[in-house]
Amino acid sequence: MLIRQRIVRQTLLVLYFLLSYDGVQGEIKLSKLEDLEMEKQLKLLNKPAVKTIKTKYGDTYDCVDFYKQPAFDHPLLRNRNFHPKMKPTLARTLQNSNTSAANKSLNIWLKENGCPFGTVPIKRVTKDDLIRQRHIPPPEGFAFESTLSNLATVQIPYDPNNKFAGAGMSATLWNPHIESQQHTACRLKIQKGSDILQAGWRVDPTLYRDTKTRSFIHFQAGNTHCFNTLCPGFVIVNSKFPVDVSFDTIQQRGDKKVWEITLFIERDLANGNWWLLYDVNNEQIGFWPQEIFTKLTSFANNVEWGGVAYSSPSVSEPPMGSSCFPVGDPAYDAYCRRLNVLNDKGQTVHIDKTNVRVTDPNHYGIMDEPHWRGAKYQHMVFYGGPGGFETLC
Image 1 (cartoon, rainbow, N blue to C red):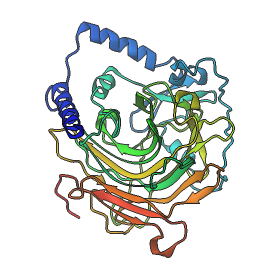
Image 2 (image 1 turned 90 degrees about the horizontal axis):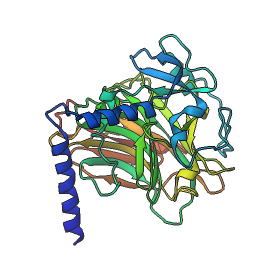
Image 3 (image 1 turned 135 degrees about the horizontal axis):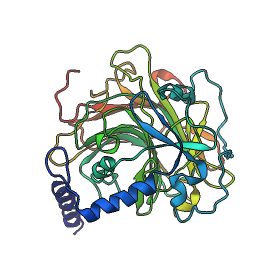
Image 4 (image 1 turned 120 degrees about the vertical axis):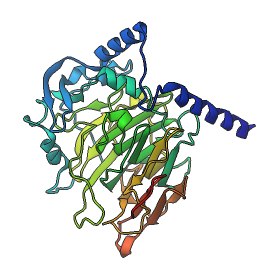
C-alpha cells in the first residue's frame, strides 16, 4: 500500500510539471483574473521604498522601513516588540577576523554602501519573477518524497531525543552550469518534524532569473514554506547584507586560494528565535521568530550538511558542487567543513559521527572525513558530481 501511494505521488508530481510548463522556457499565459491577482501580490511583496539601490549585477533592492518589511505581514508577527537594534542572546563566542562577510557584501553595491539604518534591503519582485517562481518545486521531504531531488549529504544520526540549539559550517562557493528547470545548492539544514530551516548558496534560474551563485534562506513551518522574503516569516535586521546576495568571487578547480562562506543558525537563549549569522564574526542578518513554528519552538533534533540538486522530469540531472566527483582535495572539490552544533546548554560540539546519504551514486558522490589529515575539529565533507552531463574532470 505504501509503495502504491508513493508511486501515485510521484506520478502526480511529474504530471504537475508537465502541465505547468508551456514550452521549454516555462512560459505561461495569464488570464485577466490571474493578472489582477498578480498585481495584488506584487503590491503586497514590494513595500514602499525609503530608497532604491542597485548592485553591480543589475539587481534592484528597495530599502524598506524595518517595521514595514514582509515578515510583519505574518498574522502571528503583527504588533510584536521587534526593532532594528535588536541583539540576540547567543551562546556562540564571538571571534575576530580580517575577512568579514559583511565587508565583502559591501562590494556588491553600485554606488551606495547598503541601505540606511532603520531600513532593510528587499529585492524588488517583478511579474516575470512571480510567473517563473510558480514552478519552484516543493523542497525535498515536503508533503511527499520527491524523486526529482538528489542529495549528497551527511547528517547527525537521528535520535528523537537530540537537542540542538544551532549548527554551523564553512563551505566553498562554486558555480555549476545550470539550465532551465534545474537548480543546485549547498546548504545547512536544521529540522524538527515538519519545521525546517535552511541556509547556504544556490544556483537557481527559476528562483533568481539568472545562473549566478547566490546566498539563500528557506524555512518550512508546518504546511508553509518559501525562500528568502517571498512570504512572511524571516525578520531582517541587517541593512547592508541581503539574504539573496550574489557572490562575485567563485572557486575554480585547482585554485590555491579558497573562497568560502561561513554561516550559523542559532537559537536565541532568551526568547527562542532562530538567528542567521554570517562569517566567523557572527554578522547578524536576521531571525525566524519562534512564534511561526510548532516544533522549532524548542530545540532541533536533526542537522544535515551537503549538496542538493534538482531537475524537472524532462531535463537531465544537473551538476553539483565542483561538477566533478570528489577526490578528497579542497583545491578541486566542493566541501563543507568545521561541522558543528550547539547542544541544549549552548556548548559548541564538533561533529565526529555522521551518516552519509547519496541518493544517486551514479551521478553524485561524497567523501566524509571527520578528522581530515589528522586535524582536530576539521571535519571535512567533500561532495559533488557531474549529474547527467559529460564531465571533463
